[in-house]
Length: 267
Image 1 (cartoon, rainbow, N blue to C red):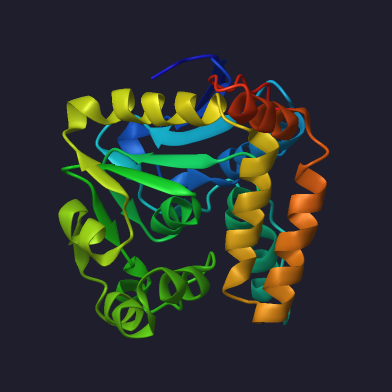
Image 2 (spheres, one colour):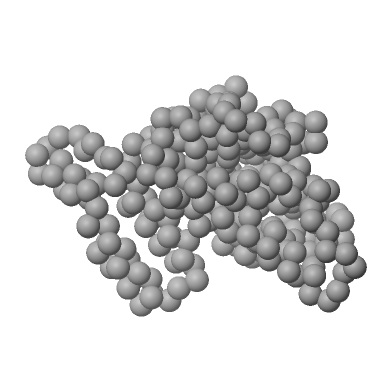
């Protein structure tokens, strides 16, 4: 994977318009720490604001994509009082997943191994999911006597329907990559040795596209399942109005009229 600055146990680099965010705790199956989570949230925010970043890939090293949350190292507030747990979830797991969904650039998950708990939800929150043949997805919460967090009960029913979501969450069984693709949780399954190559091809293709149009499309699709038809149509019209002010929209129209390939700048 592209390697830039090592911050804690997180690798980051920007190449060809793509921000690569790589979890790098293979000895812990890339369970995500508080510090890593905060840095990933910051990197996703930076990707939204940086015109030179036009797509994001989230992946990991070793055999695991992300085995869940590692809460060691999180700030302690002393004795727990009523409301602490809910606040921790809101500011932690939910904020983490929201950062992926709200990133203004397309986000690809390249799942190299086991994705469990918040690790599975991290993948499901991404816009596109590529998985190695050896990858597995596990709604592990029930095994620990816990309620799913990190938006799982929001994401899964919208991706695969409530009955299948309940099956995964009630039993906590591992779902293989081919099974996940059949369910609709994964876009494509590839041999492990082709995962990075495929992620790079998809991300760089997105990075050459009309970035603002993609951002607005992402926003419309994400909001559509929570909207009535009138609201969705109004949002669509507003998005089109905004997008038509961009250089890329003008270039797209001009290239069609002139019968040539469009050259998008992401602006």
